[in-house]
Image 1 (cartoon, rainbow, N blue to C red):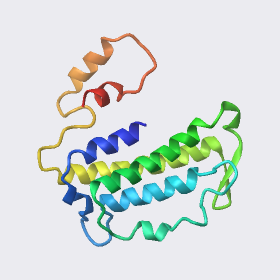
Image 2 (cartoon, rainbow, N blue to C red):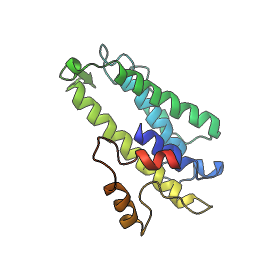
Image 3 (cartoon, rainbow, N blue to C red):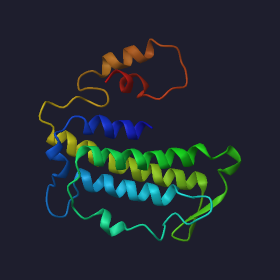
Length: 175
């Protein structure tokens, strides 16, 4: 959920025309990155317990073809991909975590597959954040601890009782 929200917060800070911006012909636009994530998410997490994570219907190469999508269509792919991930994760029990599933005929425990995919998604969300930061026109609003605010942030955190939480819980809700 954290990476989904980070991507959304970054995307909200750029104009629609920036969604297709590329640094050069070999780089990917945000549209391309989202299309790739969407294709990967649907392929990996649809029927993941019973079928290989690289589905025969996936058109991976087409995910990297540059195209223009309006923000609404882009965000639909973004949401649909993440929903597929969340639905699959919600179906897993603790007893399933050591179960073997396959991605391109390579066996992974479900826990390994989750780690593999979350690392992949966080990599691409980082790209989206970086492009958005470069292309934002209004002045970038930090998605983590703003520059020169570490002492203030730490003082606030250490003034709270110890509890299990994610470091982004506070700022995701506020922004």
